[in-house]
Length: 313
Ligand code: NDP
Ligand code: OXD
Image (cartoon, rainbow, N blue to C red):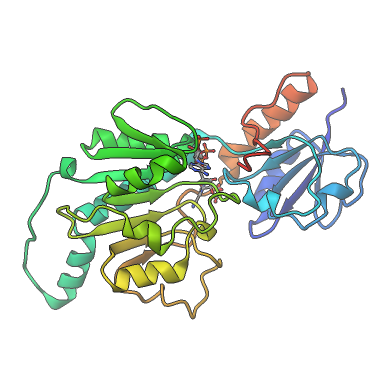
């Protein structure tokens, strides 16, 4: 079979490096060219323009350049072809680093020390063992499990919540709607690594934050969201921080991105902001896997890391 051509449609990413690496093995057409082109069989996308994909008469598969695929499902005219998401050691490693960094910073009172230093305050707060803190990971998938295993090795108690039962040695696991409240009640630091789907949109709201455990050495519960911004209600997080429901938050994702300059989250003294940078998609690490999958598909083999269209992730 002839090697299929690729449409590269990536909004918000610099396409040059992706194009260069993909072009090493296949012909690449860069959006805005390519609409309706019958010679295109694959689309490599990030936030592609609505109805672009449905204009391609011979499209056989869509490759997301991220682990999340909500940007693809946002297209009202999404054609019924397989969608492949990113599962890659490099991306998983980045996310594990982010989660462990933020958990350790909250656990080891990073905010307090950053406040003390400019005032030249020499004060050591009480230290607690990691085992006194339970980190609850919402979304015990590829990224959640990897982070969980490093947190376990550091001695934290770890809980996990997923849609279906996902046992993991050393982790107290909870599943589905029935497992949500017990999971929250057993969690001091909530780490959100869920995909954005119709079921998870807005799930990080005041009511949910209220359920988190507060009797811990941290002096309150903590939120870390590196999943998607629209999982959370920014205003509910601010309310929870202001009334003490939450002690601190680390947010990598926001309802609107880039986070508007007018957002109170920027200047909130209890919030640590990163610009959707927890785990970047690096083409040098991701393109070889995409090209390998395209070759395998053309040999009649099945695609890996397929999105479950019904579940939306
Ligand atoms: P996976 O698909 O491997 O895991 C998703 C997890 O979420 C699974 O455990 C799944 O349950 C669970 N889940 C999904 N829906 C629900 C629900 N309704 N209720 C409870 N649990 C649910 O995804 P990844 O780990 O690869 O990635 C997770 C997300 O991280 C991505 O979708 C993306 O949004 C985000 N991300 C953010 C990045 C950043 O830089 N900020 C970078 C990369 C990813 P089950 O196991 O039962 O299927
Ligand atoms: C992703 C992301 O989904 O970077 O991979 O957000």
